[in-house]
Image 1 (cartoon, rainbow, N blue to C red):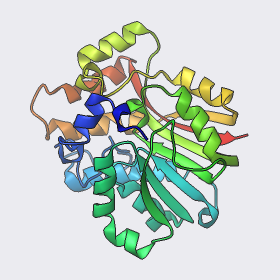
Image 2: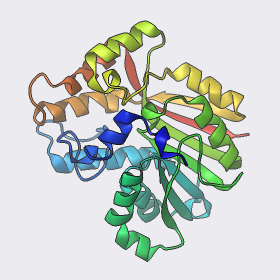
Image 3: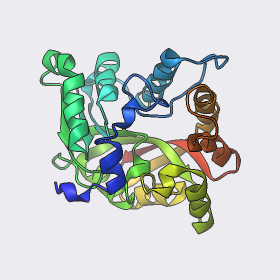
Image 4: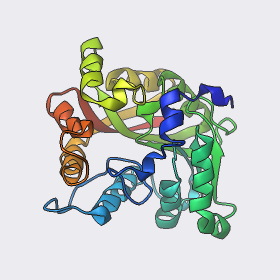
Length: 270
């Protein structure tokens, strides 16, 4: 895979900056979290880690039983903790974490060295892009992506590549934040949120993505809004974590204004 394809903001954020060390994250995970059931009176780092693990569990519960028969891959695995959790807690037959950034793959292999040694034939980390996955046709039973698709430059290629690597009947599960449609929404998000301003995040509306999935041969496409379990809890944690007025506090504003929402998307390969 050509490493020149990595956008500059992605290369920097997940390379020398190592986003997992930011105050808004904890424990090596890099997602906004599922805060359902968590006491928001005074959330601390342990609660933050729990929220991020819960988001993975919500995604992984979307795959059918028995999990022991399913070969999975995660697109945009970061430091690989979610892939290790999938194997440890859900007992999938095999899990491969895929990331476009070589630094993240290096970190994933280091952080999860014990798990890799324990499950040498069931856990792996590999370089790959959303539209250039390192798997043969129909090689997987499931494919998931947890808060990574907002970094993909476009989602049409991802939809078709997911269809290629999944066997008929295989399932795709994607969770991330999608934006309202139209140039006005993208412009307003670039004003509110630094990650959209510098090109780290891309304004992807939900409707075109679900249409891409249908065009790629997926059936039973569903999209569940889970923003109420994400944005208020995240903002409450940030209140005690980042400086007053930090741009990340505007995610809640963007959600309340209808510019952005968090969704769980599932689709089955026809």
